[in-house]
Length: 99
Image (cartoon, rainbow, N blue to C red; front, side):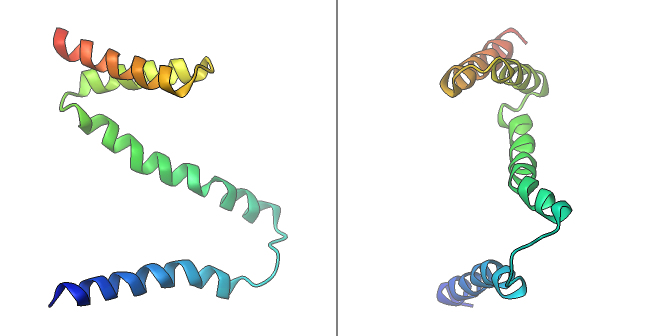
């Protein structure tokens, strides 16, 4: 199959994934439960994509776990994103040097 066919199939697939919800749901969703489920889907998908990448990024589970723990603690303390990223990266780097 040619590359053009691959691109066309992926374009149609992406288009259908985005259009089907608009066609299926025409009115406002009134169910509080469904609204709450739809509200949290982006956070769940982002977590599902991010956490596996975190633990395989360094090649060492211990340094990844230390970096993640540092990121969680600094984020919980409401520090700016750049501080969280630098602290987590530094913690993972220093842990990989020590271990």
